Image (cartoon, rainbow, N blue to C red; front, side):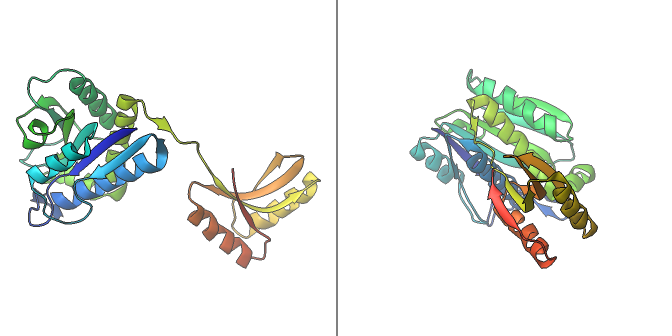
Length: 253
């Protein structure tokens, strides 16, 4: 079991950097919680702990103490930069070797693969969270809050998700995490032994605005109108189809 400690920088009375109507503490929490959800929901053999889960003041010592007492395998501190620059950079403690440097190489590269940021390089610094953590540690600076072009990206929730996804991809590669089997919730409105009957129902569904397809499985022609990673989304579509007059079933596959 790999134990990942995620540290959303700042919080509570400490807003962190500010600019362009944004506060660092809010952005780091969003990225960190999204990253935590990705790791827990999509991977086996990983546990996650956050230094904070809301807008609360947590001292630097409290953060590293929590990670050390939990005996985390990795410490990842997420921040947003300021000072008029642009782009992404990451930090480790000066003078450390592998595996910390290897993890930095991997995560730094994976983040840049999925976000449109200038590469400011892999760096080192005597930051508390890097110095006082007893496990390999990395601090990332994800864009500049006081630069308009970076801030415009940081205002986009989907871009924050990309940042989280880049970190998750890096952790997957660095720690050789195993993906959970993919489960899809499929919405079906009919199953027939004759393809013509399935095609007829699919045509009626399309006429009512549903994206219907016919799939041959288990010797039956099944009319499917959606497939989702979350059951709630499948249930929403099923309700719409039922209101439109179709017999509906949701099943896992």
